[in-house]
Length: 232
Image 1 (spheres, rainbow, N blue to C red):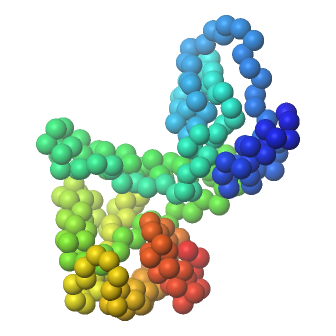
Image 2 (cartoon, rainbow, N blue to C red):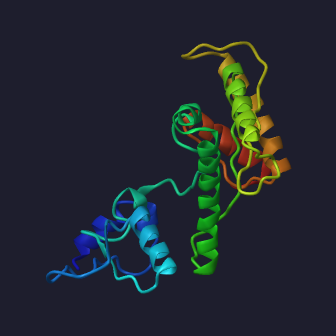
């Protein structure tokens, strides 16, 4: 493999660049291949499918076809975290499929995150895995309402704070004056107050990872780390 191709692969993401061994594509198919299951793409979906198929039925002939290298696509450029939340609207899913279907979906998503940890442990994969839960922070009244609604919905499914694999979200509301979009002298004050509340929750809950969606949340997370000596 050329040095240029190796550099191209490593330039795609931090995760690929940290791999010690050469990023060498597997040999191309020389012709037709008979198999029981053919999987196109060696990303997370394809590799997880192949892994569990092999566990469930070891005699299966499984072929994974990848044009480049494993993790070349979005799986190799992800943010390095796994979320147990259902995408979309749980209320809409409940209207379409019923209460029990949503409950089972919520449980399956939580169990999937736990299963990642099980495989990491069983296969002795050194990937820095930490199962720490999720902290949702609310900075406005509507956000607080949505967080409470989410907790109430999960409890209606029979899930509680002691339910393993499904941490419930605690909202933190800073009861200052309303703020509008755009620059405001009040926003730095809100950020400082939020740093204090995040720091207290980080220390109390023993959180080690804070994921920030935007630059302002990142600044709050970094400040909370500096104050609490926790890793963000």
